[in-house]
Image (tube, rainbow, N blue to C red; front, side, top):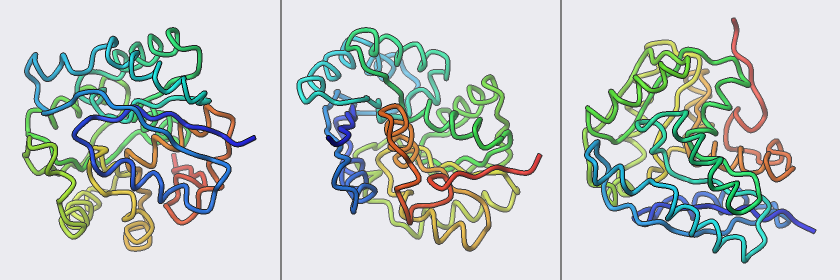
Amino acid sequence: MGIRLGMITPSLNTILEPVTYRLLSGLPDITAHFSRVRVTHISLDEESGDQFTAEPMIEAARLLMDAKVDSICWNGTSGGWLGVERDAALCAAISDAVGVPVTSATQAVTSLFREAGVTRFGLVTPYLKNVQQEIIAKYSDAGFECVGEAHLGRDDGFNYAAIADDTWGDLIRQVAGSKPQAITTMCTNISGAPLAEPIERETGIPLIDSISASLWAALKLAGGDPTRVRGWGKMFAGFEVAA
């Protein structure tokens, strides 16, 4: 019997599903299934924060359980600016409600950092400056130092999906100049994942994309082997950074 992965998706997101299917191409025994929660904008205001409460997430997770998924991932990066510990509590609440292990994009990235020994990272996002600053502060609280960052200063979340690969490539190269141990492209409505292998060949720095990390973490929780996902960067093969 195969592995079924449940993904809770921001409602405005149009990148996550097609990229996840591409990541799983060639692995017919592993399937991904999606449920949505309403997310219409990204900012630090109270209305934006209210989009990421437990109740709608739990309802979305319950719908996924009708498909008997083996694990669930909240495929949004809100934990980056709301707080890594708060995000972990959200995942725990969802898991308690539905009875399968639950992770998130934020938990996935921090887990990859810890497994690889990353303490100094680079950050690339489409977000507003104040959101970016809050992510940097919250990751610092969790023990990770941002040594280089680039952001586009945008809050039009639906349109993130249309941002060209060249734009992301340029920002990643800019951040690579700060010599981080890894770079994360943080947002699940941008197409950072396909850039991992070419950027890693060019810079030598592992690229951890939010969508790729979410799949990695959900697959591990379901008892699968992430190394079976090939051609999408060092994170799936496993990497360790020099001390």
